[in-house]
Length: 226
Length: 344
Image (cartoon, rainbow over all chains, first blue to last red; front, top):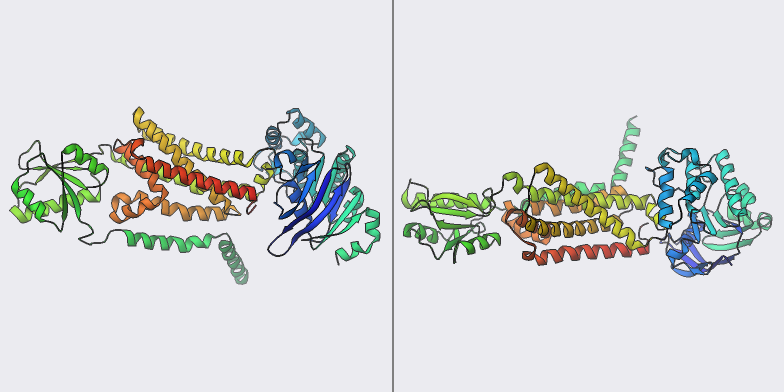
């Protein structure tokens, strides 16, 4: 089992957040986490990425507990909705910094630049790149240490059709290389294209966990956004 | 058009309120009001001058009687010799020492910490008034003023500039940088790597201390201020601990803010009360009493003494420990905030 989540809970003052979510993920799955705004999707991913400290509950990635952050970060890559890159530095600098902190050989930088079609932009400062390119750098950076689990928070939010298609292609490639992918999404076509399983959240609770075909046939899909 | 301008102005005011900029508007007048309250008033008793007289030297009886009888102006203290007088001056137990002149009989040498101070002016004016009352117009009783700080006026302002630079880097630049890293999720991105929280914190502390060190070295190079080796070691020790204290406190301030604008505002709120009472303590007895309450004075006082009065690290162990403790406490709080992902 790649990921095991048990009663993971985080409540904010406005009573939003995530309530005792429990599920398991097998290696190689591609899971879309869906739900209305404020349902707890991003909170779930941020807790798994160590951005938010849970109020209670547990989660393990390949048997490693969330509290063991330094070991967990080698198992999990996280791509936030807004790329958190050092804007005033180049693409290459951003990758080098993280390669150094992960202590991975610099050859991974060249591989990443090649793999994500960023070679011609490697000397460009992040601030001059389009959002789609920033997202590619962000995904590339999260995979520098070759983690088996990739978490993406609305990976195509705010992107045009062409960039969205490019990101879909990248994510399919990443998934087919054997990595487990968890992503949040509002887009039905994205879910249909990328997901092998869907987890639906409503007001912080888990209301559906199953195959995409079952999800789109069920009333959950319609009620979720009603 | 007017409606749009009004709407935008209200929006700007709302932003200023949200990022706490408006706090400055209230804080600065409030700060000025309290500072003015603290500056000395013309209260005779309050401004009584503390004068040291020397037991082992003989004074003209007339002068001595005049000075001792003017108990509304002076508090007099009998000290063993000139060396003890210098020690009392450095410890600020007396404002000046009146010693019989070695060059001119029937005259006095005034020994003070610094010539350009309100205490020196007050002593000279008061002794001149006494002389006038006692013997009318005549040769001035004070024939020479000697300062323990023989350095040029430029050098005498050096501790104030160092304090200003240290506080600027510690309380304005560092909180803004920390808040920026939080605001743009850069810190969380870094914590997505195997680095430990303490490593990030140490790197930020080193940044602050390096910036402070570089600014001070640059200041010395530009002003061509020299230091001997022994003073240099004490000076470096206080710069290090001061840099640590204010960098650490600045990082802590950064953790209290969600964005850069709030951090800048909070930085200024701490910058002014730390800078002004310490920097102006030489010019007001009241401010000199209030200033030690601020960490900045525990840094400024020893730096001034080491640079201008031949002070030494061993004279200020409590100040050193105080600065180190404030730095350590602030770092500990920052570490806890990081662990909790506070306001991130």
